[in-house]
Length: 194
Ligand code: MN
Image (cartoon, rainbow, N blue to C red):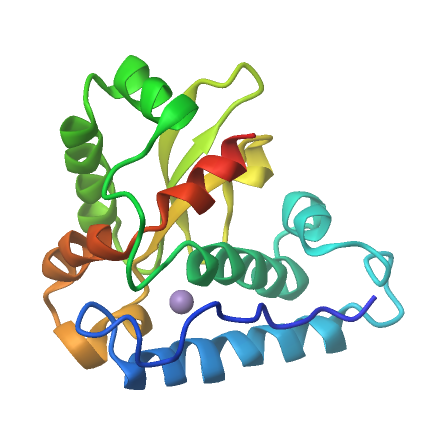
């Protein structure tokens, strides 16, 4: 199968000022495109040639195929979780209940999620995911990894690679992560919980 770029449901300038058009053009247009191209080239003639990106990210051994599949999956979930004008500023329904159950409150969840992103050393991702019983987990994944590697269902992610924020925020990773809450599309994130 040929891996494809996700189609953005918003214009490249629509997430400003949280994420600038220039960052979208580099991060989506260049970085993600490179991961997609690399993955398509790398899987040719391998056992992963006909596998979808979730399978490859979960099962490929450490190495180039895993790194690029992870980054394709991560960025697809990342770019599709945003909206310039979300209908809700907070989770709703089942996801809202699960967050209160597992983190005490939405405010406390945001605090813990921000802390995971800020404290991740080097390049990687902060994730909210759900296990098979529906319990929620915040994890820090290095480099291109994804919670699917541990059998979890990924729901929400913050990319803390410097390419995600350096053009707009330079070294101020915490300020960037704080701003991301403004553009999270909670309907999309809630749908991932099932
Ligand atoms: Mn990235």
